[in-house]
Image (cartoon, rainbow, N blue to C red):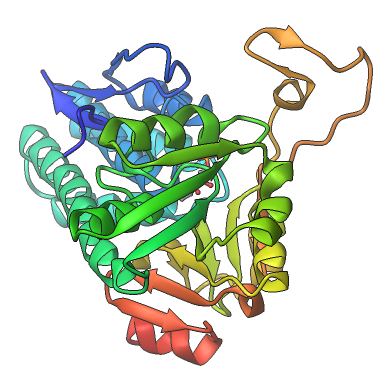
Length: 347
Ligand code: MRU
């Protein structure tokens, strides 16, 4: 168990750990309507594919609670708007749409009940999604830990930890599970420009757990892979296409190319909810572009010249051929291929 929670339901509202303030401050603002939850997802108060899926599900639950005293027509119309605004909050991580689709099925299935009963159904559904996420991460942790040597050094990129999920984490979940199983894991954390999820979040999370961690600039990754023994790279994913291409935080593709160059296994930890059979390959994955200010500076300080042209895609696609294996709650899929993914999904 970590000493913090990424999200939880308290006093009829959704409480989120404001990840923009970490590691300097732990603050837990509360959210009581879908519009505000969508804003929190958009502004990266909460981030990471599974975590934004859970937050969106709770966003529907808070909105249903807020609207439960209104007429059936107003309740339905208000929730339709909530699905729209939450669905548009971030484009790349498919877990967001996956969670909303699941909530929509619950809403449709509750037609005929009164608004309060429907709001309860939606709250239970959101809690179930979050509870399942933790169980899934632990299962992935067990499968992934078995791939790691008893003493090893793992590189990771961005934050795929408890902060990016309802708890335990995907890539960091594997590291946590391996450590709990008695393996001696040292972690090299890429800082992950431009938003520094590695430096601010992953380094902090691992430090809290007492797992040995070394922070590096992203640009030091190739040098370190060549100079010292890095036994594996493990990252999370925002969307895995039907052919095994993986969208994850910008810079992941570089790490995969470097890992292949140095003969290091490149593992992607992803719950099945991150695999999107409706997206044929990486070219069809929408890549989010964020504010140019994230590249021009950080935390109110600008270092780039004024009026410079800036491009800020925040995800990239790693082709399936560079992925050693996908690690899921259902097991490990080596060298992901369309057939392997279909079989994994039971299709
Ligand atoms: O922009 P972010 O911080 O939401 O990006 C997060 C990532 O890219 C993670 O690696 C991914 O969501 C997997 S989290 C288990």
